[in-house]
Image (cartoon, rainbow, N blue to C red; front, top):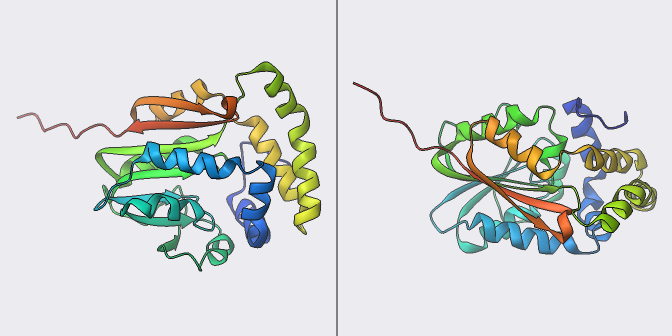
Amino acid sequence: MSRASLDKDPHEVAAMFDGVASRYDRANSFMTFGFDRRWRTTTSRVLDARRGERVLDLAAGTGVSTTEYARGGAWCLAADFSVGMLQAGLHREVPMVAADALHLPFADGSFDAATISLGIRNFVDTKAALVELARVVRPGGRLVICEVSTPTFPPIRFVYRRFMLRLMTWVGRRFSSNPDAYAYLAESMLEWPKQRDFAEIIAAAGWRDVEWLNLTFGVVAVHRATKPEATPPVD
């Protein structure tokens, strides 16, 4: 596993997640001190998936987030590039499909909303993935992304950047046979754009009304956007 960069080999990333799938959810909760559950709950509220809607949960991993979003009665599909992660979540009662974020196997406008939880930073091309998501979401549909961000409180930002790599490397050695995978995840977190910078990437991909909500002092941020309504043809 190479060290993290924003030029990621998608097959290498998929293989990494395949290798840590069986213990990933447990390790994730440990590393976030249980805050991952709160972040999913808040993301679900922002998403506001309703009965009768079709929601794409991309980079869904084992489907733990998909299950949360489906509680309101919406039809939610878990999609991920890592087959190992999907297999680890087969016990969950949500539909699953292996899919490449840059070439989604869905028709235009197939979903009312799309969401990604703590996964978009692993995509090889962030903007291209956001453009592809805009293709499969109907006009007027929603995008909600929960991702690590830059803490707004200086003391927390210092601790976060100083000790995150050490913590995740230790967790990798304790919970996984592939500690380099967790070093990669930590580096990808530290390299991720700040809240406003990521909002600008979302807008550049064709989404509008982009806004964000900081969680846990900005350690994580939930970005929300809308796909523009279709413009009627001019006679």
